Length: 293
Ligand SMILES: [Zn+2]
Ligand SMILES: [Zn+2]
Image (cartoon, rainbow, N blue to C red; front, side, top):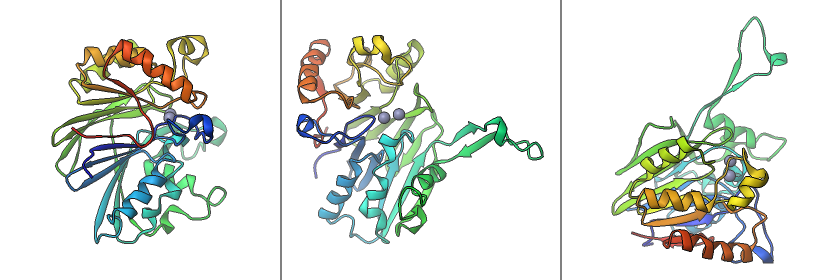
């Protein structure tokens, strides 16, 4: 494999099978980042099922003491729903390092116990993923998956180190908060900012965060007119904002991701033309695309 970044799912919100989506693909967010021997997956949308199939096909999943790092931007369904179907998680020889933010969720007044005075519930990434696999929703619990799991808390704004790779993190403007990641790989950097709504403050933060990245992948779910007409507050952005950030941050390549489930292939081909006029090095990402630098 000579790629550093490969997209296995670029759809937002919900998977969309069907003929109208076969060029750009219908799987939800999951991206494989590989550098030297380090394997990182961003999010576990339905695309992660095919990452699992490839890791097995390439013989990596059968290696003794194989390690995979999975970083979650946040825990909305389109970013976690593929995890129960990620076959390497059932391999006892694999060690997964799972990274995600901990959320403190206000407890409803009727559930508060005066004696305990507990006003918030703590949802770390382990608890969040575990609930997706409780009995009502899936037959196998996460602690019944055979791989080894180590969980790591991410505090947006604090960097991580994964093997030789420094990873910067950023708070993104999204309901229940999303995390942006910037990976400093051997030959350049890859910045991934999905699920984020524009605001003057957030845009400036992203411009600083992504400065001079080789690749900048950015939530481009809506056209500006869609955003203005009913999608404000839904937590997503537009290609016009992505192009503006790319210009101001001197990005080499801008990747449009998190396609709206209502946007079929024809719509996204038109979007490619529109985006290229704003920022020539724009690519509306199709499932299966891979990039190296
Ligand atoms: Zn999403
Ligand atoms: Zn989301």
